[in-house]
Length: 311
Image (cartoon, rainbow, N blue to C red):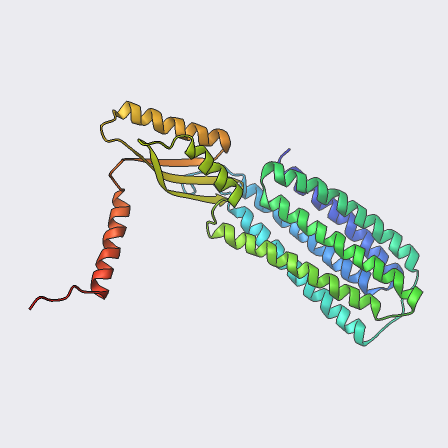
């Protein structure tokens, strides 16, 4: 199943959910249900935008983008995080206004049932999408699923608060719970934006994947072979790794090429779809790039700490 299938389902579910939540607000007049509906409006916009972005991300590499377009996913999750944050701020503003100007609410049981139905739909879709995100390693699907999960938490808090209002007579309880849930949404928004920034800044693979990569390389390390300058990065669903492979200078080109092929094959078996770049060097050799970097550092140190002059 492709990412677009999940996102289309999310968009349809969001439209159904927002209709139910607006109905719950209309029935009760609760600011909690209104805030919940506002958050769901963001779900519709986010799902539509994610569906647009994933079309770009799935485009194959071309002359202008030889490494593909997968980083477009980070724009989607970042903007979705910002939208969640805006929704949380709007919820707190409305809840603050209701806190200073309490108003009674009506038909609470009916409104709670309608909102609970919408929440159940969101929960089912979110769990289904999280499984798909792990399978496809898609941050777009994960961001949209987590967005739906925040909506579930929002709705649960709102339903509990609204149900307690007629029982306790505390009109302030509705907006207070709305503010508490909004703070939780802000935390989720920050997490999504941070992940997007990490992706756009070429963050390396996570610790578990790095440990697995080193385990593959350890199978080939010996007195004749060593690896250094191992670098990785993640771009959406794709992973990239580059490294230096040092081997004896007397080896034939065929033997060296066979060794490099074996390493690359092992990495691709461990991480299907990974782009691997292996630079072959002799045991006592560094790449020209590294030699130039070392010379630059040496020259800078010499300027900062000049050798004492002899009398």
